[in-house]
Image 1 (cartoon, rainbow, N blue to C red):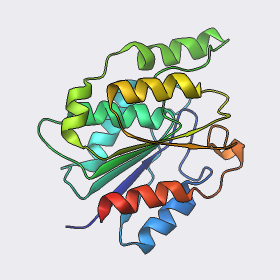
Image 2 (cartoon, one colour):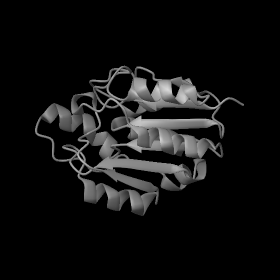
Image 3 (tube, rainbow, N blue to C red):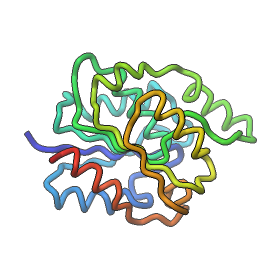
Image 4 (tube, helix red, strand yellow):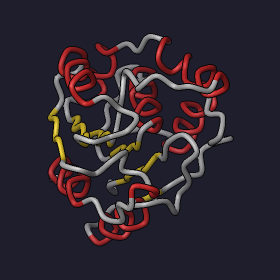
Length: 191
């Protein structure tokens, strides 16, 4: 079986953003088949569309399937894992993942993010789908409050949590073009 990795961008993201192309190249060097899909209508992400898109892309998941998400892509991955019935994946690496965000000011943004924050996730099913979860957070993320999200990730999933210094939201606009910690975690899970 070939190792497959899927890198899922966030809200308003795109496949060529930030560290995604670098991660794709580096994982391919390690023998992974890597896809960075364009998620549907990234300016207005919806749970059904994004989880459905990921499910369609992955097809039949297996323990050689690795999921890497950024921001809303992490929410997508967790919800996808919760939808699996007894199927397992090799691991998930969640960059700037969240269960709470800083308060948003625009009503349109609040309306977009509300279902993502309020629709429950079955964490028992997530843990049944993989015991390999790494969460990567930054101590100066302008959207994801560090302490509260560390607390919630520990409570819900007890993943490996890596806190990095001054990486912002890890987006293209944060200037992050390489992210070795993603590569390290993914390769360790695939070993």
